[in-house]
Length: 481
Image (cartoon, rainbow, N blue to C red):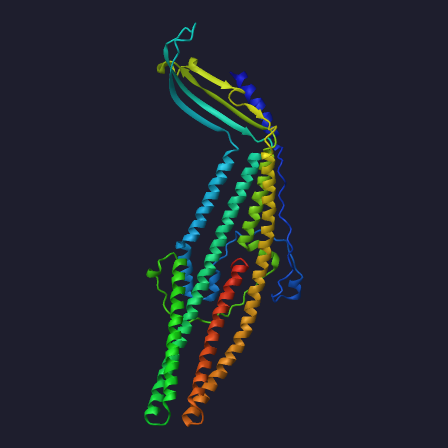
């Protein structure tokens, strides 16, 4: 018995020693052109000339980056979204799927052991001449174990395991990308709702003022100081303000509904208290371009997809070489169930008839080579997608930096325009009451004030949106900043 086992184990060990003959290409991250500094970043001369090699860090905790806005309501909404958002839960499920596939790929590195118990009943044909049991019926009982193992001669199994591991890392990066996108969407939708609240409050004040103006104009008309034309104009302006206020209300309702969906709630069950948007005075450091490659989860996901594609080239190339599979069975056989567990009933079968076989592909019409070509083409596609994702990330950061800078300058100018329009409105109203100008000039001045204030509110909303977008573009929060 020992001799038989030795005869099986020795060839197996020799085959395992040959398993290092992997034929897959060694993976190296593709080179990408990284600028020394962002064009729109305000960096010192020393920082602009500093550069470092990017090291993947997309799995680092981002923290509660939205805390820089110092809004308790936003903090609560973010926590709720991370608990209940369905897209995030779907992304988490995809990570679990990838992990399960990785465990399955790793399992191929180990032998498979099976066990079974069964019986077969057979009747021998009476037409078989010379058979001792011709026309007889017999039962054969079997209890046996089976062992099968593929020796990874050329790294196919290892390549598949590497690809599955890279797929799992990619799924985790995509989960973090979905999480970051969710957090950014919640913040931006929240700020949009607050912006519309501020606009609604502007219209409420405008409607009150125009209602008072209408009463004053109607009084003067009844006293014969003015014509009915001024009354008609005042009523028209009041109706226009009410109509525009309803339009803002419609947009606000849609924004609130969208926020509810991000929080994983039916819109009918969610209501956000009204509160005007507060200007966001946040300066966000962009850091170095090489840091962007470390922190962006979508870039990490694209790079991991590239690593998986490279590993699958090795698996496809291994199919061009011989494959060695070791199989065998050992068990007990008996025609009587009571004799099944006796040592004399033992049986085993090893050898080419069961599968200790070395198979060598000779001709398949180019099917295996086409698999290699397809794997290489997929790798080249993923290289292009990776480089494009890097370029896109750089562009998004530059857009965010320029948007914050220009919106800040634009807001300063618009604030001055509001002050001037308000002063002009005061003067026109005083001149109208003195009878030196027509009511049309009062209306124009009032419209100008409302338009300028709406522009300021819109700019505040855009600045908040741009701040969140920049945080998303640089990959999330930056420690304690």
